[in-house]
Length: 193
Image (cartoon, rainbow, N blue to C red):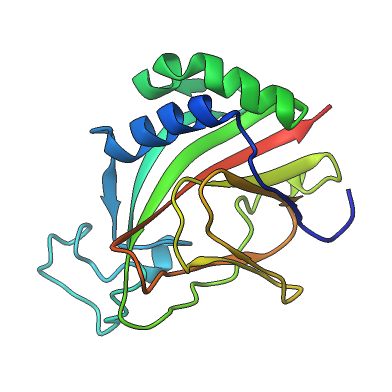
């Protein structure tokens, strides 16, 4: 794959996508995060119970996250959502030529009055994952004017059932929506065959 993100519209069959997206967006499996890219963005809302808030008041840098699957070299974590969506996840694996799934999670950010560009980052800082076969895929679950900004100036707008695939080493940043209350994406980190 080139150093340019690949955009795939109508990624999943329509009925499969609708069921997967609806379950992703309405499940009771989210945890609030007072950061989006790294814990350094935290203001202390959670870690210090709000008793020692930092002066950092960038309220945009927060999200709700549902971790569906995580694998390291010696452990595997699987959620009920993953088990209930197993057939769809198998289809995602097939479509992306996934040899090894490392992480599958859904992130939800809140709409803002003005667009906000998050911090540029890669999904893992572990240099062992920075090989040509390791990829990051983002499956957009709902349509809105937010999206993903890549370091090479390419912007991919959130569109339901659109998937963008990039090398895991390509820095990217979320862009908050201004025309919807919620922006949902499923983030997939994997090694391709």
